[in-house]
Each structure stands twice: as structure tokens, then as C-alpha cells.
Length: 176
Image 1 (spheres, rainbow, N blue to C red):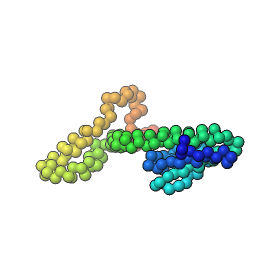
Image 2 (cartoon, one colour):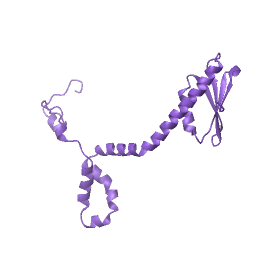
Image 3 (cartoon, rainbow, N blue to C red):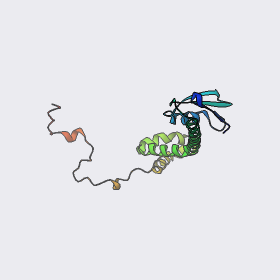
Image 4 (cartoon, rainbow, N blue to C red):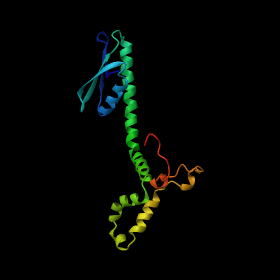
């Protein structure tokens, strides 16, 4: 391979990487995975050419061992470059999922307060007195957990605790 130089006497190899093909972040990730096999020194101009100097941790490493580490570095470069591309493609979907998950934890009133900013843009609807209807409509877009889906509570242990319900109960010895 023309971008791999092997120096078996020094137990090192130099891999030249085109930063237009593999960004510096991908090179970092690929080197990190192989840290148990070798030492990695990054050099060169990140705009033109990145040089990865691989120094084997095994003093008795053969030429084939050095070449194997350099080829594994290439495998990891492709692996992390693919991951970076997929992550960029899926970013909008992940953000939508997170937004939806966070919104499902809000009560109807809290959600309505947050979506008021969006509704301010539509001044005509505000003047017609439809703000409340629009807020309710927005809040209904987010499905709240259905109470019917909850498990029956014959012992009554799932009820929220309030100080009023504690009247007449004895305090535990640890609290007294």
C-alpha cells in the first residue's frame, strides 16, 4: 500500500491519511480503538495530510505485525467514517425523538406555556380568541399516557402520599 511505510527495525509504521477522506475526528477515534496494540503519534497538516506514526508496544514485533496494525487502522477509519456519516444522517430523527420524549413528560399546562411562543406568531388567531383552543389542540398532539393502561391497584399503594393522609399514623422509631 502506498500510504503505509514500514520500519521493522524501529518497530514502527507511518500511515499517511487524506483529511478530505477521513476527518481528524475519525482519525482520533480509529487510533483510540487500537491503543492497546500500539502507540500513536499524529503529525502533519490537518488540512493537507495527516501522518499517523504507529510504534508497536511489542519490542519484538515483526514487519507483518506492524502491517497488520496499520491495516486495522484503515479498517477502523472506515468504521468510524461510516458511523459519522450515519450519525449526521440520523441527527434530525434523534432530535425529534428526544423532543417528543421530553414533551411527553410535561403536563398539558406546561406544554401549553412552551408552545405559546409559536402561537405568538399568529396574531390574527389571538385576536379572535382562539388562543386557548390552539393551545389545547397543540397539547393534544402529544399523547399523554392513558390512565386505562395502568395496572389495577387493589392495595392502594400507587396513590400519591399527602400529609393529610398521614394524620393518626405513628411515626417510625428512627424518625421520632
